[in-house]
Length: 229
Image (cartoon, rainbow, N blue to C red; front, side, top):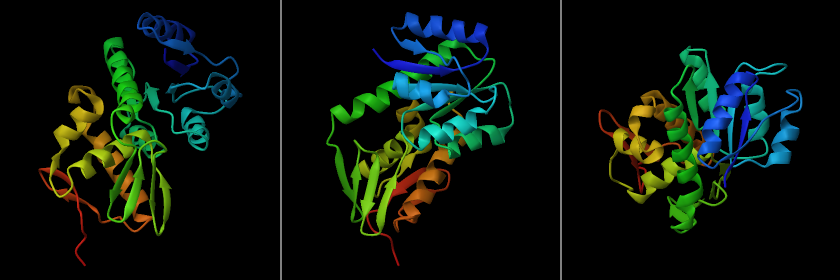
C-alpha cells in the first residue's frame, strides 16, 4: 500500500481528499504542525507528496525545496492560484505535476495513479542502467554520470530521458511523451512537458550534454547518438 503525505491546511478539503484516496487503498497522512513539515516527511517516508502552495508559516514552494534537498519522491502541487508562473515555478523546483483548484477528484486520482505506476513499476521490468553519449544513466538512483560529473534528475526527468534514449536518433512526439508520462494527455498541460524538457536540458548541460536532446519544431524531441561539432 502506497503512503501519501497530504500537506493541506484546509481541514475540509484535507478530509475529502483523504477519504477519496483511502477508498483507493492509499495510506494518507497529514501534517499537524506546519512549521515542522520536514519532521512529518521524515516520519512518514511517503511514496508521494501532495502539497498546497498557500500554507501557514511557509508556502509550498519552500517545502518543495526542502524535500528536494533530501529526496526525489514524486510531488504534486495543488493551488487555487491560476497564474502560469506558479506552475512554471513548481516544475522548476522539481514537482511532477500541478493541479489547479477547484478540481475533479477523478482527475486527482488518475494523476496519482499514473505517477505511482510510472515511478515505482518501470524499474522492475527493465534494466536499471543505460549508456548514452558516453554517459551512464542509472534509472534506480535517478542519476546520470559522465566524465564531466554527475547530475541528479527528478522522476519525470529521468523517465523523459529514458524514453528518448530508448528511441535515440528518432523523433518522439510530444503527444507520445505526454501519454507515456501521464497516461492521458487530457489531464496535463502542454507547457508542463516543455518545462520538464527544458529543466532536463539545463541539467544535462552541466555534464556536457546540453545539445544532445534536439527539438524538432512541430514534431517532438530527439536524443542524438552523436552531436555534430
